[in-house]
Image 1 (cartoon, rainbow, N blue to C red):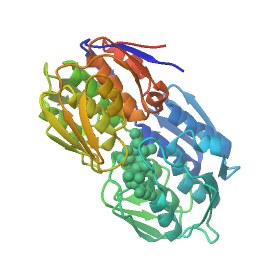
Image 2: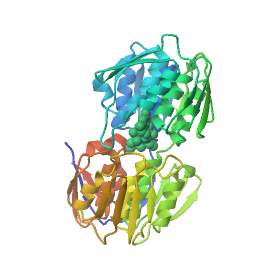
Image 3: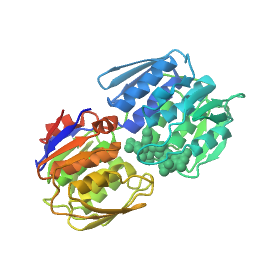
Length: 417
Ligand code: EPZ
């Protein structure tokens, strides 16, 4: 089991190109089962989560290979419609194969993804929406068996919550359904737009992605296409946190500014100065951060829940008190245990975390228990006095491509052993 060793208090400098978005790559790779022929996906990050998706594609009968950041999927028709537990369990993002395989093969069998480190992660909204499209879904012993005995028919669907995954599953199931589907209260995240762009390039007819009402006119078939994924806004937010806690100036390349407005605004409140030009964003951090007062995580375009952990790490060394309200997931403060071992002063209760900034954190042996929590511990270690030993690197590798190389290229003293 590898560990990260980080010696803190090194200033960062230089620039880095932000990886492609993990939360676009997973639904787009699943969507390729719907597109006959060849799809070329550019800027696909090399992550354990994306490699797990490629294994599922190969299992289903597609050819999928990677060369650097480019993934080639050749879909000559699915040979299977069931996904074994072992493959499903490797990444939660695999739940989006539900809508894609059901639409492509008329049937899909897979295991319920089950809860994870940050919450129960139910999929009731996914299942209710797919049933409205005509799916017959049986749940037994943790496995789903879904069929569309009369094919999938367009329907009007209103989501109780703008769930990203449920919106994606509906888009995938509806784009070759008979008739028109309207999704009201759809998720508006940029990754939804990225998926719609890929599907429309494949011949789908999806309008309104990015807004709260998406209209999908079913078409008969989809063909492969070439598509470059959007940059990962959460990786960008994490790198901004790393610069913020080390009083650094760094430039992020290949970003989309409009995806980062809530994150930039939070760090401006903390005293960081940003300058944007074309697809680059430079952040200049102060010697000492000021508190951000209140941070509420919300569906896009509000402050993203995935950036809460790294931002909380930055708040733990800011001057003053910051109150976090985590509105999206019920168990997303697990990283505060490791931060407390490093000297942070944090009290959590349900959705709330009250962070009293301390002058200094101190390196310590800590263990990550989820992806963004790992990012928070790395952020804290970069500004801590002394050496931090981080266990649970596998969590970091689910979402951050070569993160220790990225940070050491910016001047951090970090090594994976
Ligand atoms: C996606 O998860 C992302 N994952 C998450 O990123 C992200 O935090 C989340 O969206 C919110 O932006 C991927 O895209 C692979 P939701 P998803 O459905 O789709 C509840 C990361 O760190 N809910 O919008 O699972 C759910 O429990 C990951 O990269 C139901 O109750 O998120 C949660 O409380 C973590 N029933 C809330 O809604 C459902 O049927 C938001 O979930 C579906 C969701």
